[in-house]
Amino acid sequence: MLPVMAARTAVTPPALGVAPVTLVVGEEEFLVDRAVRDLITAARAADLGGDLHDLDGPALSPGELESLTSPSLFGGGSVVVIRAAQNAGKDVTAELTRYTRNPAPDAILILTHAGGAKGKELLAAIKAAGARVIECPKITRFGERLDFIRAEFRRAGTRADDGAARALLDAVGSDLRELAAACDQLAADTEGGIDEAVVTRYYRGRAEATGFTVADRAVEGHLAQALEQLRWALATGVSPVLICSALAQGVRLLGRVGSAPRGVSSAALAAEVGAPPWKIDRVRQQLRGWHPDGIARALHSVAEADAQVKGEASSAAYALERAVRRIVASRSGR
Image (tube, rainbow, N blue to C red):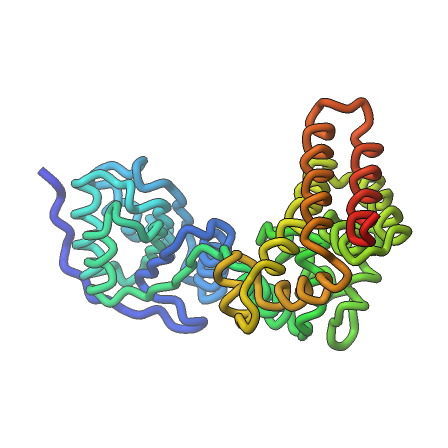
């Protein structure tokens, strides 16, 4: 038989917005982890976290929640973190549901839940009980990552424009942990607002030498710049496979945008091809000087290079340089 929890008087802990029960919902691992960490810090700052218990939902045994949230023999409250609560057993789920309706006055319970169909009854019950809810949805779209970067700079006490956010994505990539660390570092090392020039200067050799920069210079017909960026990219450790992928994406976008009906808006075309509207505008500018036959030749060159960098050639660098030269030549009609 499951233990019956004694009646309690729920007391909302003071200061820093710490609640007796907080539900962190979502699949974005970095945001979930940081939300939990911030809640623990806030509880301790308010002298509410004497003991910390951090465990996974499946590891929680029936009756264990009662002991974890009970006052310590030495006094002081406790912070209990239950991760992946959607995976908890049936009996534990029932315990968690009862607890959230009548939480201990000297304990802080933090639950994480993926937010999917699994464990949806528990999710609904905790929300209905009035728990504080922090949403951490998955960040997948380009615009969402730009919003995340801007929010990170605000969190660090500074501001960044759109050019800086895009340059940082090019330099660092889409991993949220790396982006957050980069925003913190730039904010700490820079006085005033942050623009594209600041990011480029800070990540020189990285922000300027990504596969997408190589692709942009190539499809624009700037052979010397494309080769220079290619050599930089390879020298700084960018994978030849990723560079070739960027070249392929750049040429394919030329074809898809170039074949679209006239008058289609950038936003509508962006939704169709899966690229942000600003990228569509850039590709439309890059299309000047291109003919459909040239695009077809460039695609063939990239496909050949892709096979070579994946094992058919002894030198991936040579294969990529040859592809870049052929793309530029295809644009000029040679």
